[in-house]
Picture (cartoon, helix red, strand yellow):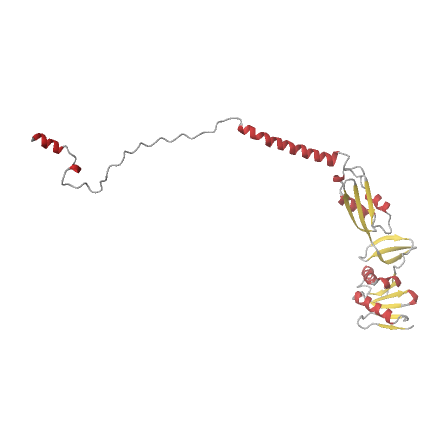
Length: 284
């Protein structure tokens, strides 16, 4: 009996008959496997890879340097893109040769190095008749100069010559012969009560304003612009006709009124457009 008792005590309490297993206890699972050791990180083998990748980059840089050097040589060092021809257009009174001489373009110089702004400045400085000039490169061997000349709207008598004045009041040239279709200024305002207020320069400005605003057909028939005072300007037309203009104000409207009067009264000798809304014509 003692041996049976010993055997009974050796049995686990969970296997004892009449007793339920402990709460929360479950069937024994398979034994947990021990944590596996982390695999070592693979390290890329050191070798000539980076040096191999640098090869194409260096080759590209070298090609770019050679290309830039070659382009610079073509533009500046070769004879392919040099100035061989210079032309001038737009002249009326001047000749192209005069413009080319004033421009002094360095023939034979690399076309890319030519300073077009300096050329334009030279032409305007040496030829006051030039109002504007545009210097452009005409690849591969040319420079083109497009000029616009000033046009006189009034002449100022000076000894035996005539000073040409453009619509901006610029006195740009002196010529021995009066150009056809350009009126001559007669300034006689010394005894005017307004002489102190309106000096000669101001009166010249008014005369230029009037002459520059004349419609082309009337300008061709205008022989003289007489200025007695600021508001006393008279035009002398061909055929002994005269026009009382007044001041330089509303000159555009006065020009339109005079055009209408000349058509309505072609045989009249005296016209008055000093008040453009009430023009008048008289005489025959």
